[in-house]
Image (cartoon, rainbow, N blue to C red; front, side, top):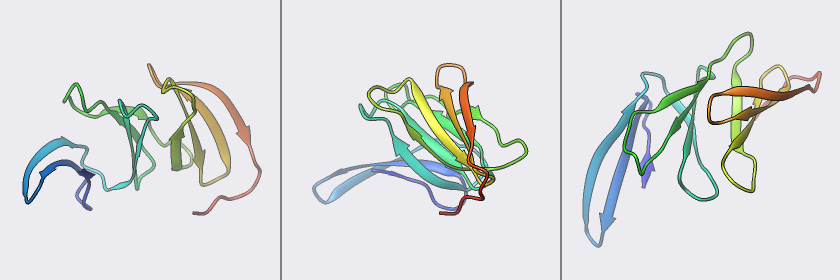
Length: 119
């Protein structure tokens, strides 16, 4: 079980029966608004309240890597494009939809919806 309270720390709880073990995986110093696993569960997207998107690879137990940083408009949500886990799509509050290459954070395509987006 992956969990993030308001402080921006990503926790992993290994639960077996009535026993559990807690591990701190990453601290990104920003409140995390959503956690999204890739279809094959190898990459976890962390979207913050400030609109920054991080990737975390549970098998590598490394730090979360900043993928996308909010510029003029905060990222409201992000998710993986399937099949696979090479690309993600994001939407900003201002209505810009973008497709990103997860390897290096390159923006491959964008479309402006010309409307403000709300969750």
